[in-house]
Image (cartoon, rainbow, N blue to C red; front, side, top):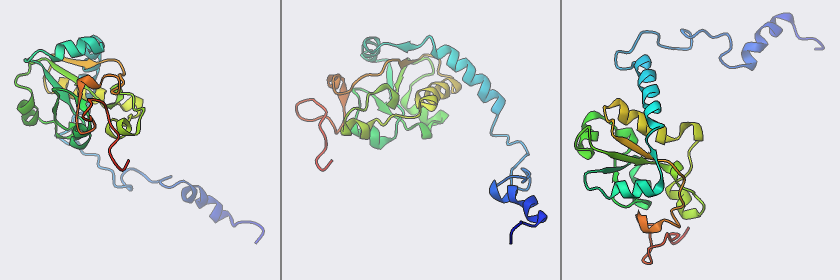
Length: 192
C-alpha cells in the first residue's frame, strides 16, 4: 500500500503520543478537592520558609559550635540505613517520610528548640563509601529544602541549615557511623 488511508492519518497523533487527546476525566483524574491537601497553603508556607532559610544557613564552623549546645537538636532526616552508615556526631535520626506532629515532638522537645539540619547535598561523595552513605540528590529538589520547609510548616521557627558542602573524609572527627574505622577515618566496607 503506497498511501495511508486518511482515517489512519487522523488517529496517528493519538497513537504516537500516549495520552494525547485524552481528557483529564477520561484519564481518571480526580477533580474534587481533598480536604487533607491545601496546595495554596503549601505554596504560602514554602515561600515563607525559603525566605527565612536564606538567613539561617550557617558555616561549618558555626554549625559545629551550635551543635555542641546540649539544648540544640541536630536532626538528620535521611533514611535510617544511610544514617547508620554515616552521620554528624550527635545527630538524631527521623526519616523525612515520617514527619508528623507527633513524630517530630519525640525528637524535638519544643517548637522553640534550636534545630540544626543537613542532608546528602552537604557532603562531597568522592569515594565509594561516602557515595553509598550520602548520594547526591537532584539540586533543585535537594531535601535540605523540603526538610527546612516542612519543619517551618510544623511550626518550628528556630531552624538552621548547614550551608556549605563538606568532605566527610577530611571532617571525619565530626562523623559517626559504621563507615568510621578504628582509626577514626572513613573506611570502605569489606566487599565494596
